Image 1 (tube, rainbow, N blue to C red):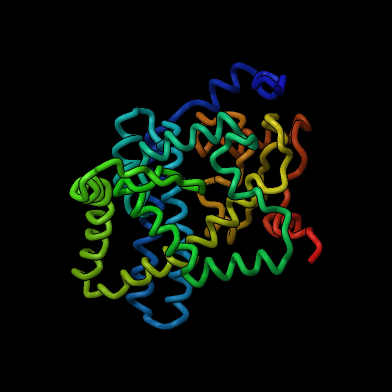
Image 2 (cartoon, rainbow, N blue to C red):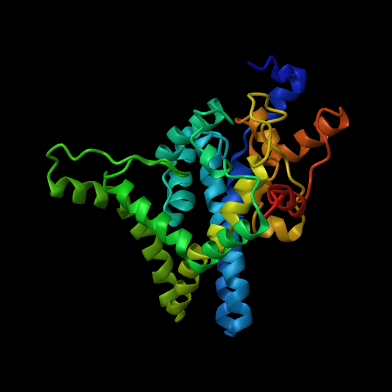
Length: 319
């Protein structure tokens, strides 16, 4: 077991400061994410051409990931100061539009933090095959951009929502024995779990239709089936792939340097500061850069690699 303690990295005063939540920052993050989504739809509506559609697929995929990250913040009770706002806003404005669920995600995700990089880590399957070859990673990226990865994800989410599979956001879902359960029970559970998804996406599609741009909802779906899958994969690789298999929080995850393009796509809302997040999971997203600066100033962590450097590292296996 690691003997590392949080006070080995930060003073008690710093810990209290980094744990301070802010409703203003929470609304800024949620509002800013939806504002960029709205601006992207507006740009595609004003300048409808292949270039803006491709740009829309990229930006919307990044903002769908941002909504997932906001769900993650709400699951840690760090998006807002109160549990009520974390559960309500995190659910309806962040999780549900991208087929997420704050409560079920919270239960799953706490196991990841409790058992990081161990055999009990539910997210271990996301990084276990690495390092791999460049050809293998290219095939994974192709599956992401072709929609194959999303099709598997959608099928899994559907089966989880109707109660046929155990819930997970990574892998390892298990079939739940039927044990005489009537088919109507599957239907009722599915309606209960999927209704918020249909409501939030129905509102989005309805707003677009009301402005005469209903077909642009297809770009939202297209991003969910392509770029969103790709960005999820790259983000996951950067966080834990090819790190030390131990319980030491300074060595079993990493922080990655993110430029403007990365922040727009694979690293929204400072999610690239993953080492800092694991050190203090209750710290809100907006404190993470400062935490990183403090750690680097004390030479507690090495310089953060770029996403390109991480991708080279995870493809270091010879063909």
